[in-house]
Amino acid sequence: MKKIFALALISTMLFNTSCSNNDDGDSNKLDGSLTVEEGKQQLEDNSIKLLNKIEEFKNDDALNEIIELAEYLSSSNTTKFSGFKSTALNSIENASSIQSKNSLIEFNAKQSLALASKNNLIFDFEAESGVYEWNADIEDFEKIGESDDIIYKISYNENKNAIYSFTDFASKTVEGEELPTLAKANLKIDDITVFSQDYTATLQDNNLIPTKINNKTTIGGFVFETNYNNSNNAKIDQSFTFKIDSEVIIGYNYTAKGNFNNTDSEVTDIFDSVDFSFNFLDAKLNVSANDNDFDLDEELTIDEQIDLLNKNVNAILSINNKLIAESLFYKDQDTYTDYIYNETTESYEWDEVTEDIINVKFLFDDGTSSDFETYFEGSFTELEEKFEAVFEAYETLFEDVEI
Picture (cartoon, rainbow, N blue to C red):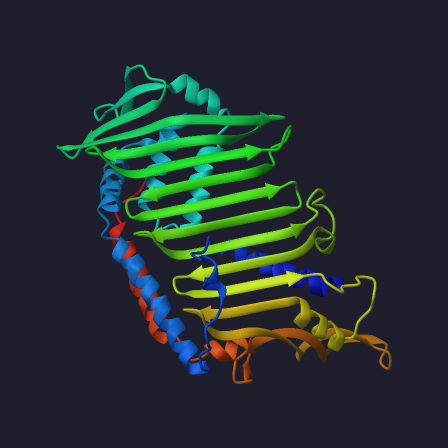
């Protein structure tokens, strides 16, 4: 039973790797339901609408200004740089390739690494403070003035002027490990801000475990925000949003309650409950799980485990506050081939084995149900075609960017 509940919790948390929602109060209340086919159609329409917004973003002026600068720097030998020069150039490349080589989540990871992967960044910041200008003849920055900030100036393509500024930076080091606690930067091209980052973190005393993280990255009309808050190791809240022109495209809220003082404990000893909300434009998946009535030392039958899971784990898929489906755990069978000892022949032989397992499926408002594979099979073909078209459009847009 412990494994089953652990699986349910972990499955909930895994959505974390796939976003804050745009809820305010009563928006969580569902207003009616959709038929199976209506749900499918609205999910596909919603996903295509989402991809259209992402596709339109490739025309964003700020993004294209960054791409032009990145293409110019691509022709230079920028791989030789270290310290904050490397961080600045990596940030420009990360931003410019946000929808080609990087997915949205990969962009955030790479941008975080641009700040956190170098040793002694605080010393680099203090040592490199000043104003630098790009010299195309030697393909390097030359220091031209003093400043408390780090400012890189680049004149390129005859009449373009870019200024990349690190205005604030701080970090904390414990036992040789360093983690940024403050990082602010912006990129201006011809006096217009096309990229900015504002990162703050609060860490526990004497270690690098965060109690609070806030990050906001802006590229023209695109905004990425992420927040993390640990309340005395008893409650963890985490969220992030991707917005285009102030509209949430993808977002999630995640709240876990329990005892997080000892992360080496069994997952069921750590968590009391998990609540998760995932938004993709107008669609939403809400998942909640708790450990009420779970006796980890009690051996339960498959049917008893299913009953307990259906009481304690619930997922609701909706769109525009209309119910599409809920989750339903059920008994299924798994057939596979295994190497089993045959007492008659006194040897191991390959044999077909069938056993009862626990599975989960969609339960619709009309009482019918469907496993996930059957529900999606043969549907959403227009969505697949749209995704390929958007991917190819961005591939073409970034084909000349190489840093």
